[in-house]
Image (cartoon, rainbow, N blue to C red; front, side, top):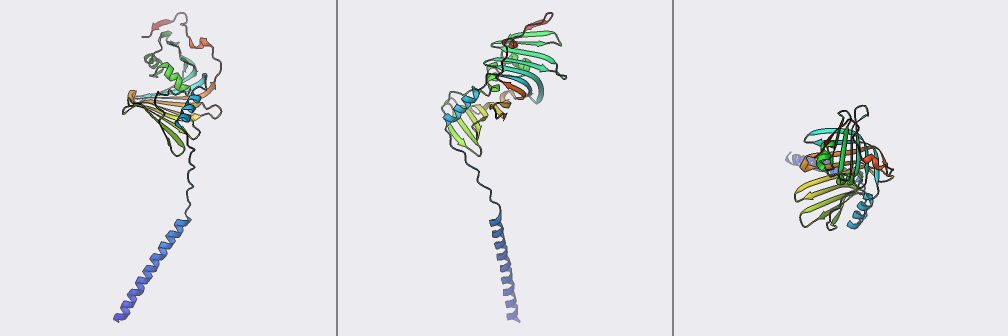
Amino acid sequence: MKNSSGLHRVKERIKILRLVLFGVMVALFMGGCAAVRPPTPSLAPVSSDELLQAVKVQGERFHSLQGTAVLTVARAGREQNIKQVLLVQRPNQLRAEVLGLFGQPVMTVAAAGDRLSAYIPGEKKFYTGPASSTNLYRLVRVPMELPDLVRFVFYDVPLLPFSSGAVQVGEGYYRLHRHAADGRQQELSFDNRLRLRRVRYVTGEDEVLRVRFDDIRDEDGLPRQVRLALPAADTQIDLEWREVLADGDIPESRFHLQPPAGTEVEALP
């Protein structure tokens, strides 16, 4: 009886071992049959000079833009959407006709050079003064200098006078890091077609400005969405073109306003 019991235990162990081996073989077989993810095609190497040249070419492409756009300004938790007819021309000319609920102009702002004017027909008031960032924010809620705003709308990114920097190649993108001895940094990100998609300006540990370009047109490379973030001012500005014509003729008079008769004129500081 004792030998019979021992023989039974040996048979049970062999049976269990066979089951374990069978399970291991099944797992190996299934693993071998699993779909293998194809490797991501690597991007061709590019130099920092090539990327900087792409930025320069893109930035010099347009002379004027005009069309309808929506400006969304978010500041300190509050958001405002402004539909407008927008005209922009190099180097520092801008006209924005802010539209009301039924498409009628409720305010017209025009800036050329160092002069800015605004007309509010509902109040019969006309404002005029320097085209400063303070006055731009007061009228159109954009806390930027006029030439800087115009450049970003034109996809014309200011390149700081840094050394070329190092190029990082990722999955579908290039990233160029540029540094200065005084601690300032500039980071530019490109897609696989060498189109600039994001740029960051950093001083020390603080991010000063972040810009993102989206919905880039294939026919001419114009971004229909420009998103600017100013962390120090807790402000984000999104410009989305609904309809836009590039490099059309815009009369110079469109960027200058005159107060209508009977309008109260107030000087901006």
